[in-house]
Image 1: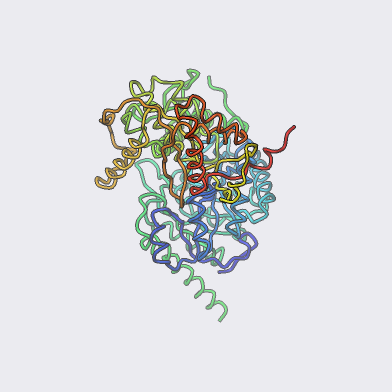
Image 2 (image 1 turned 135 degrees about the horizontal axis):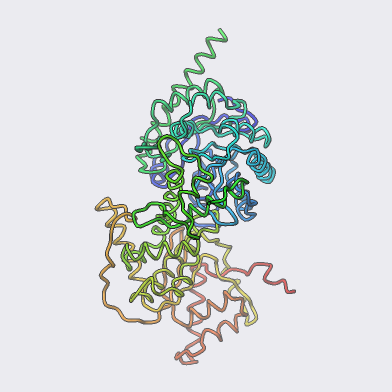
Length: 286
Length: 303
């Protein structure tokens, strides 16, 4: 893997999310996994089983933290207690970079626990970039922001989502966690060409990639992380790898979770695209 | 006419108001908001429709997602309370509680932090089983706290042996002291086992299954004192004598040891001559379970 400054020049390959139903398998079988992504909030506690499990995982595996409630786009200031606990966890895991979502989800101290979309306005660009900078400075590690799936668009928006993403990361000088499944879901819900999005992303800032499955309803698609990755999403992934080079990749599977082996096998399908990239690179060199 | 929110803060407050508003009985977004505004107009004031979905329908997706998520999480934390009340009454209670106390924390873990106090103040949501429901809520919230609260280095047996009347101690943060109206501890544990069994055997997602209030064994009100605590990362409940409970509660409040013991024996029928042997037994047990630790440094700082 070729790293960049947004993932601390890491050589992380293909990882999977650390999920409770897989704990017994992981501890008894000790499978070879390049790295696990953890949901930071599940481990931002003071003691007990969550931290004991995490310490056991850290003895054998590399861990990267992914958050779900930093809400970079919220207008109210970050909760100092949240930041303090997050930094404590960062020190514990030694995560080389940390990601959270380009969204909002709390206002005036009330939390929705959802990844709510932002209006793509210049005001949102400024505020979001400022908050990313504050968090990144405080945590003292690279931060990557993830594009979310969305089901609503705002009348106030002044640019496309990919233009918004680019403006935020350039101003915050941060990385991108590019979720190609989220791009696909939003492209169906908002009727845009997902390949245009992937082609527009500043590739040099992509720290990590996410792949996942979703659920299709009559009038929209929901990002449910409960199915295998579909072909159109693999195509977006292949294009992202072409543009970004081999990049740490994580399969998300959070609901109706199948066996560890099934999840791992699905994630390992990404290897094919990484090998294709390597073969093409060799051809060019030859 | 609904004013159009234009700034980021106006948009976020308008959207949060809509998302946090309870759903209708058939899990749809309500047609009118809390101030009587038409939600169709509210949604259209900041959400753009597309060819397949109106602004209202797009906003409704987030309204539904919010409630499904918090109700699922709440039901998971209070499974015994749900069984005692039945799924219908529990749903009413959950929506009312979460409307009064929406999450104020970055983590869903803290969703039930105010439930006991809220349920005491709102008995109409539990009906005839109110006192038992409060006990169940106490037990289940204690589990949340005992599960992942901190564990500090305990006092050693040697340190405990050197304590004197003026010593001030602290309890491990994971130790939760409960004063119950019923001997509800065994019932709650049995309901948890039953819930897990049903989910396992029938493949039921307990959050979605319709359950009437559970048939419960006959049992009388009897004051019961319990500690929820953690050993080897598992949570256990331990019955306490009233005197032991009161002593531990006084220690937690920061009283000096002599004062804590005095508080423990107020109104006690135990003969004075037998009290020292009880105290020795308690300390032996607390030492074994590593419940006692040093108070935090800041507690020594006086203004």
